[in-house]
Image (cartoon, rainbow, N blue to C red; front, side, top):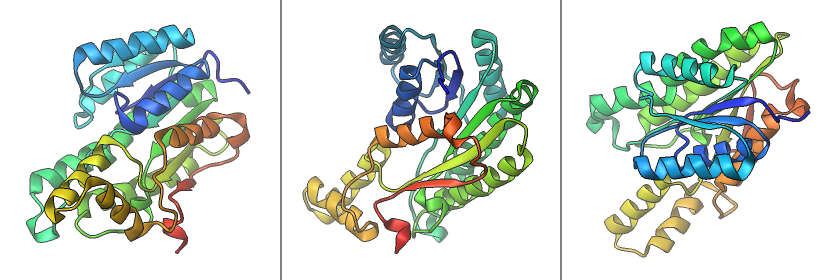
Length: 261
């Protein structure tokens, strides 16, 4: 089944995994609603280039994913611009690391809001129209940390475990409606978020950045290479395809063997 003419929202899509996912759907002929923070000129350039390259409409909305009203407005704007939202990719996320007793309350609240609650609010807004049209694809970008835990990441791990659980419930409730809901669980992906962790480790330990990156991988993954954002994008396109139409409430893992151990 071709995705040409479908329309997608990809949250957190001005950089990293989200940008790769947005570009992949545009390449499939989908109209795309971008979302995220960044330099307005750079975002406008991304929007124009993506539209021109793929011959699709590319819109942008800077909704703050910690604010339910702005999330609902994002979905409404996409529906108005494209006529429908066929594909919803919940990708926006933030990170902070610290031992539990030192974890700032405001960081906990922000991570839960953006990494977990935003997904609920977006699905809640987009799902009725999907069900009415009897077709929709909801793709939640979870994490290996939605399946296993690491120290110092209490909010992120809690949020991503929540995403996996939410995905299961939505999948069950969407059974036989023409709408599917599934999650992708990447291991280490070299995004700006992860690069910041690597840089911090290198500085803290007084080692080269390249060595800090290898050490980070070796702690978790037997396969010592990062998953590429484009590989996650490929999984998202697969989940939107007819091939995956009988997948419901499940998780696709790309983690270099992290969770196989």
